[in-house]
Image 1 (cartoon, helix red, strand yellow):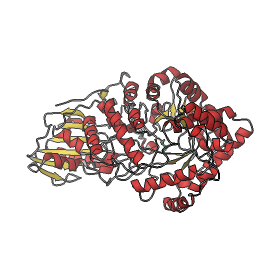
Image 2 (image 1 turned 90 degrees about the horizontal axis):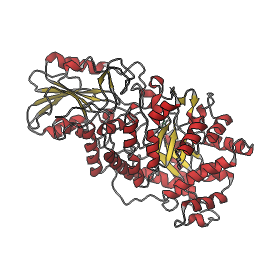
Image 3 (image 1 turned 180 degrees about the horizontal axis):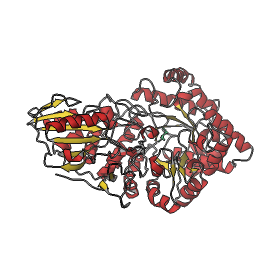
Image 4 (image 1 turned 180 degrees about the vertical axis):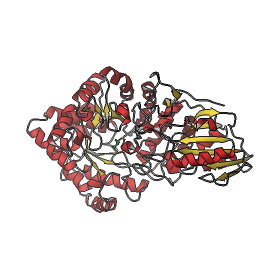
Length: 599
Ligand code: GLC
């Protein structure tokens, strides 16, 4: 977990100072930039001409909510604030978020130019930081649907929930192309195939249709590092880098994505955060990306290889083409260092102005100068229609790997035994980036576990017995449904360089069931293909459920045939010990990319 100041203190500060931001500025500057009928380029030019260097650097600065008060937003002209994963107001509900964001906005507007700030949060599978939000399947499951229209609808629904909390910008979608499943962020990838990822970038259209800025991330090659090491080194020729990792960004730019986030990783030994070729020459000039480039969390600090933010880090990143720096707790140092670099002539004013034009253009395009307070009159947050959409997405994401005929189960009759650590655990089925950065086992308010879904779909005529460890199972049962897989993780915490084998708890429950000879349906709840090759023969059926989120009943819909399985593998499923495995690499896989059975 990232070290953040005690959130309670920060929140108390926030609420205490919010009241003191009622003061209106001495003079509210007026001018053409305020006229929403004028072309954006005109408004940008007029506003830019009125801005001081301090105000321009403020627009390029992003602080974390736990490290900045509204008063500091006003004083330092800070243009953006984010919530890191799990960094939330108290109460962590819609009202708490609206109060927080509106208080910061009031402070941002309490300056002569009154430039609105933008609040960013990782809504990567629904508005996952906020209690009660609809949590959709993670990208790997959506990739299995091969349904760009569904992705677009999920984007729109997610953005509605994001906007209802006052947030303007989500750091999503990840358009990474995961090439080694040992990578801890594989579940954030729609596929190993860049064309599939490019097609699913339609989620951007959905997000931005609701006036929420989207972010294509992490540019470039985050999913291609050697060995799947998070923030590692992508060792590829420029031709291979373009072939495997660039198509999703070309698609995102076609969707007019507002921002691109830079990857922590390196390309052939050079940190992408410092690569003028990748950020300016390739992304901005060749691909004609017109939005703004934001760094990742303290990603700028890593450029020179020494800990902390140095002048070299800052000038290298800004001169490479980074427009806004995510400097969660070091935003003051960033402002001081960048100002000194500009005054020393080591960062040209033309670069500062280009960054500001890009940022301000998006603030104008997304109506932030006109929409300065959150609309509190809608009620889509965690709503039944959104949960129904999520349940449909869960069902469509299921990939049937094996079926001896035991599936579909018959509703309303029979004796079904349910076991496994992921059968009745919405936290596990939601995965990382759920209420906290890493996610965690246990309850997710408003969620439906797979077991609860089975009980609902099986109906009263069936007997459903559950024991996580399988105790109590005997030959009187018609079938055992064993739900295994992974516990939540995010980023480097999820790297599994040793491979993706089953854990001891799963092996134990599978052995118990196998010994009894009851027909067995195994459901794998995981962020990536797991090494199941040596177990598969003992299973009558196997279903890849990925990380379904709060609507676990979608899994039951497929188990009982309410929805016929239609999912196709978004990743090659490696043979045991066979990482990495990708289509066309000539390696023997357990199941190929695109595999999926039906009834
Ligand atoms: C993290 C992630 C990035 C996320 C950002 C803000 O380190 O790499 O995906 O958007 O920080 O939470």
